[in-house]
Image (cartoon, rainbow, N blue to C red):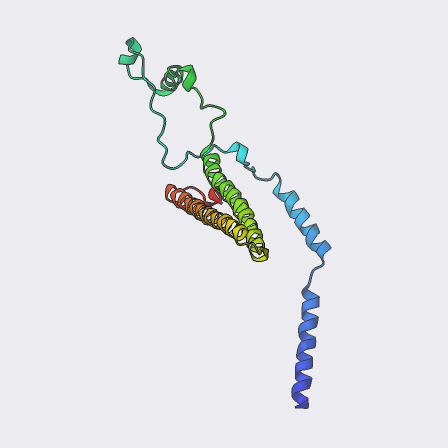
Length: 196
């Protein structure tokens, strides 16, 4: 038993000394990395979102080709740079660029979901207020001794309960609509982050 204990301590000491002997200091690693970066030279180009072209949304059709004028140039096929110039020149000014204030597909999807979530929040606030009113009417009903007043409170409470049920159904409908929008977006290939 004593021999096993001595061997395990010796093994632990050997492993500990080997670990400290092979460890590098942070300063050494930093110096080596700095030297490596100097030898590499310039860094590679970094692309940002502003430099990338927006990808057309799935399910949208490309813009139709502009009509060509019926002149003598139309009878000859255009090639190369002249074709590009002719295509650009034949576009009406209104179709030169999409409207600056037109919503992007991402904005459209986000707005649809945000509108439904706002409707849910609005309905939830109303449902909470109705629940508070129902609780107050129930308390008043229990504390009243007059049967006529109790009947009036009971009628008000029943109306509030019916309205609360309607609000809960409305909240469920809005939640189903959000689920439908998310499913529709999934089928259209829209990134999931746009509908969260």
